[in-house]
Length: 174
Image (cartoon, rainbow, N blue to C red; front, side, top):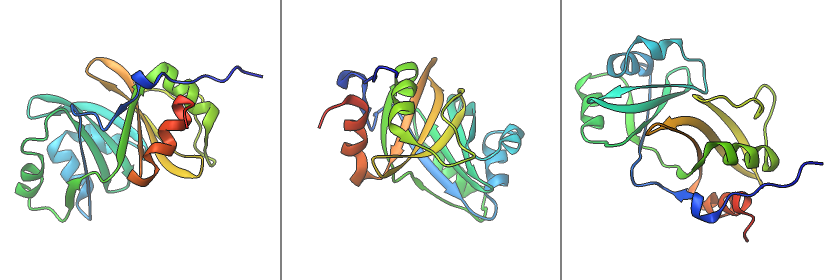
């Protein structure tokens, strides 16, 4: 039986200030993503992401479903205005999720011990530029493995009401 792994409390960043996370969706969601980021986003399957650029800054774009996307930016200056300027049939708003950012290796190892997924989703392997919907102690999460500022990171997104439960599951604290 594998030894339980925990993540150090000091390694867990709650709602990191250097990440602006936006959601957009709608009938023209895919066309908007292509216009903002490149045709590469059209090749993404749900729960796949790509690292690209927005306003000369690196960002990551996650395809949640057919016309629904989540974007992580280091600076959100102008993002909602850029979407609005396209006059597309989409809505855009800051993501309502609470976020935990962890070092990828240890975070993924702990995630595999505490999370459950439904078929077709798996946590092993969990390559970079992928996301997995899962549950931790009954809380619905999206675990997103992405490169951030040159380092692989694990971003756990959950409802704000579930943040402490999810954090405690990673760190082994109550």
